[in-house]
Amino acid sequence: MGHGIGFGEAARVWARIALLSFGGPAGQIAVMHRILVDEKKWIGEDRFLHALNFCMLLPGPEAQQLAIYIGWLLHKVKGGLVAGILFILPGLVSIMALSWLYVLYGDAGPVEALFFGLKAAVLAIVFQAVVRIGGRALGNRARLAVAGGAFLAIFLFALPFPLIVIGAGLIGYLAARGGGTAFAAGGGHGSGAAAAPNSDSLLGATTPNHARAYGRTLPRLALMLLLLWLTPVALLIATGAGTYADIALFFSQMAVVTFGGAYAVLAYVAQAAVETYGWLAPGEMLDGLGLAETTPGPLIMVTQFVGFLGAYRDPGALPPLVAGTLGGLLTTWVTFVPCFLWIFAGAPFIERLRANKALTGALAAITAAVVGVILNLALWFALHYLFGAVSERRYGPLRLDLPEWSSLDPTATLLAAAALVAVLRFRAGMVAVIIGCAIAGMAVRGL
Image 1 (cartoon, rainbow, N blue to C red):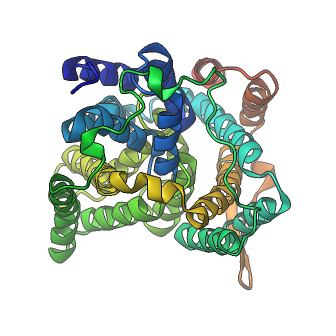
Image 2: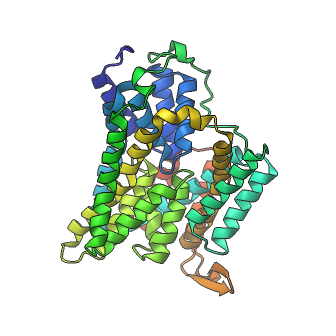
């Protein structure tokens, strides 16, 4: 290869990154940066951020796409495939095993108490995401306005998430194209460490030969991935496969429109899976997020839990556990296969995309809108965790979820408040908060 990085060694490093990738995209990107840039010195700081900026332009989980891109840069197509598959494999296995335990023993007292505590940690983590992303993305009034508009659009009018993304992207694109600077590039996922120059990395400062031209391999691979993704979807829809067809179509749509990271995806999934399809209840969505937060791999793997429950509760002629397993695997397939497609199809054009100020403006506006969407998600979680009864009220075009104040759970309120103070005031680590809340839940509900 010329850079002296053996493929076997790279595979072992990607497996290590996958097993350490807890805490959502920010934590996963930090782990990759620490190992690939600081520790192994395989890739320089500028090249790492260059790849991340490209992945931020794409729908879907940017951390997994970053792994695919760097794997491709180091070892061509096989490197991208291995890096991307290993990145999601631990989460796939963990969430599937926990989904089985959830449907078999979720009503047992100790298990229910454990999830009660985990929900408080999840609530605090989502609010922390609002603060963290907002601090980076909302640097002026225009961005604040976009975030506020996105929040009101989904909170008061229940507008679909894809429509909000398209509207925000259009605003940023037109503003940047017209010469405005409100959505100009700025900020990013800083590591806090001194920048490692590309020239000092094993990959070096020059572009590898396979990354300089499109060639014939990538178009063929892109076509193959497109067929692998959409053929099962088309067959399920054509055969009237019920819940499986709904799962395939919905999560394929999600893979195309969910810009802005895992928490934005969750807002979209929660709105549709709970309110439109009825695959699971609001509290169960919180349980699924708790599972994803406590296992390695992409946070978006919670979608596998959603697909599992959807198929488990409408199994057709199959045993429920078999149906749930197939539903979960189908969800994972249509969620992650497009990630490989986006990278392999677009990687050779990264420089052109990165230099396009209009596209950069669109991304910045979408990121601002995502803050408002995540705030809506946080409030939605809070209502359904803290209150035993929440009812929907309509006032013309407005739609509000209002709690029954008499149903406020004092224990849940106290536990959520403690978790919020821990993460926002004392900056406690995510693992510590999750473990602490799980123990507290067991103590107050399980004993």
